[in-house]
Image 1 (cartoon, rainbow, N blue to C red):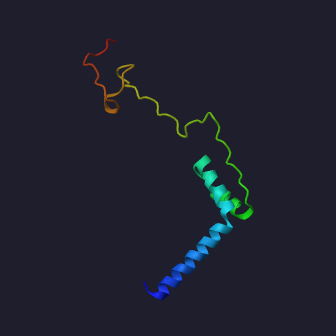
Image 2 (image 1 turned 90 degrees about the vertical axis):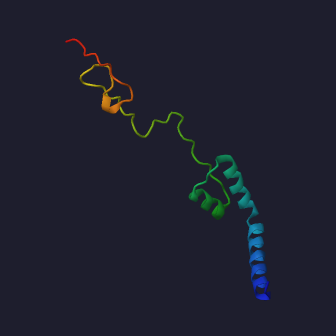
Image 3 (image 1 turned 180 degrees about the vertical axis):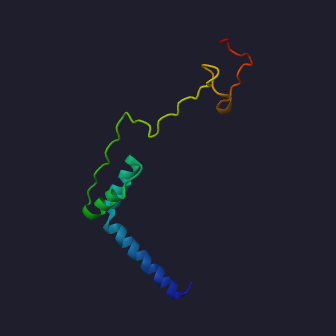
Length: 99
């Protein structure tokens, strides 16, 4: 290791250590928030860094509806109450309904 490289890495290490020690309380708030909520929004992290306070995220509603409605089951027009051959996995019976 060259002396110049060693000096640069030692200075970077000292700067990083000084920053971590100076902001230890904020790092602990972020770590505890991540342990409790698993994710933090960028706004929440910025609030912690700027003011040192943590605002927990809002809890989602308990009864969430799906974003997309379920597709209705397709029915065969010729044979009532049986799925269409093109859109199903079950086979139609070969008997033709009376009527």
